[in-house]
Amino acid sequence: MSAVLEYPQRHAISAEEYLRMGEAGVFAPEARLELIEGEIVEMAPIGSAHAGTVAILGRLLGRAAGDQAIVWVQNPLVIGERSVPQPDLALLEPRADSYTRSHPTPADVLLVVEVSDTTLAFDLGTKVPLYARAGIAEAWVVDLQARAVRVFRDPGSAGYRTSFTVSGAAKLGCAALPEVAIAVAALFPG
Image 1 (tube, rainbow, N blue to C red):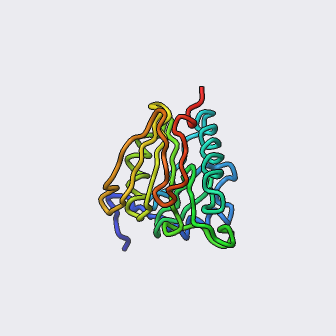
Image 2: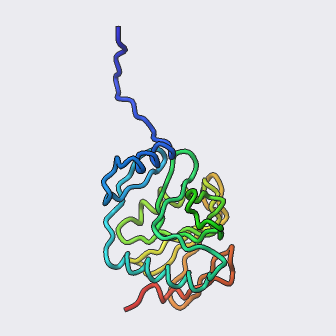
Image 3: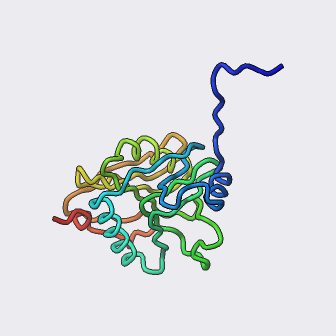
């Protein structure tokens, strides 16, 4: 006798399963995916404004951080047992192996940055709270439409306790590395 299911059962994928699937070639090489709370999510295509802003951020933060941090561009972070997001950029604690032996975890992250053109609602409503619950000290969302950076600090289980927006000629620094500061206007050329 078999059981009758009124609703199909979902299977939340673990970070370990997701990474093994990637290593086994289950996903197409060009697939842009991330694991968020046990579900595989397809990432939005990257437009030129988004790509250019990530390049600018990488260059500016790389120069400012020097050897104080590793600039991690569009690479995975293992956040708990059910999430492997790929933020647009992160500043990581320096590590001798440059994270070749294992992906970084929240304890390694000094700053995480999402660049939002068409994904602002997802970034603010899903990814920023995920980063807060994981205990990542600081998150920035670069809002391309508003030409501003939304900053989130002081993580907790209910979200970040401090948030503010920076735009125009202001400079913005990373709380973990105060000397690492960039001019916000430099992110929005033209």
